[in-house]
Image 1 (cartoon, rainbow, N blue to C red):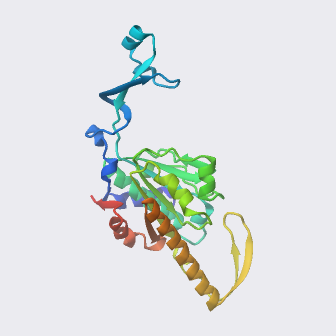
Image 2 (cartoon, rainbow, N blue to C red):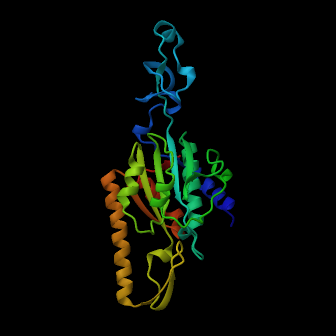
Image 3 (cartoon, rainbow, N blue to C red):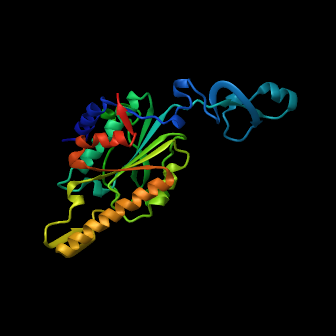
Length: 286
């Protein structure tokens, strides 16, 4: 199937759901409530001195005429609920003979559609050489474009090169297999800063969750191309399972420390896993 077909499939699945919007993100849903920062609504709040880069339309010329000082009007901010989707676009998400990339697209499209159903704006970010917006990402997911899983960089490097411009008080969802060595807190603190809610969705292929069959195998790092041969026996298989469990526990603990929610899904069982996303209070039935 093509990327477009996976997006269409996820969009159809998402018609059954709406994004669960926390109260902290409801500051001004379609202008019905007001935020606490200065913004662009019609309710006047205060004045401050003009600074280079300020919108000239906000200058109060009457004050300038009286004081010869450039002063701008501050208004109360109207904040629409917003979803920022952050997709791990590394090569490990598109390994041969695994459905991870297809499941990532379906899940992203489901959440984008759920955001539409929840009257939320949305943006989709691809982590590669920095974070870049997907083409047409403000439209329905079936119109999204430029979704390629070709990056050789882990997420922490993408954040260092060019971080995403995340909406204040937005809902932020990271979708990744998390199969790279990085300190989770360094990522999660960035995501939690100014967010209404943060979700980390670990999306693994079934093959990622079980060690290979016993015998000699050759491992190839999908990002670096580094090759390594190992012999898998019962001891190595047990070490694999223990390492995966510790990795998950580390992310789960870091999520709890930063107020985020951690969910681990298997790509081949995505449809059956949707109740898990409901339990995590990410989506609700439409």
